[in-house]
Image (tube, rainbow, N blue to C red; front, side, top):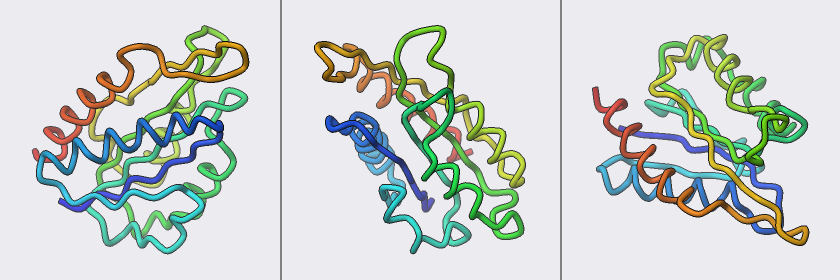
Length: 154
């Protein structure tokens, strides 16, 4: 199975990229062919040539980042309809932080893609204006990717 994994990572710590790397490695370990790219480098990817799309972003102002929104808006529904998809985001562990996954899943469904499994929320915290993933979040991402691999394999 060929998977495109497209993500944005805006903090200097590149936390969303770290989550994406864990997901990509886990999917590869499960025998899947994964092409992983930051959203700025994903313009060359022909998503129609993949079996599935995984998209990730930090939640910014209660939504996906603008580059991720633009990437999703640029997909041709006629070329991706029926393909499997999944999403993940990184966000502060707060009821007011919002959830980028909701907007991404809505857009993926509007394109006619099939959500393969429930989304992943990876929580971050800020200590002295430096962001960190909460303990256990990378393991949670690995576990999520294993479940995604199982869902994609069905």
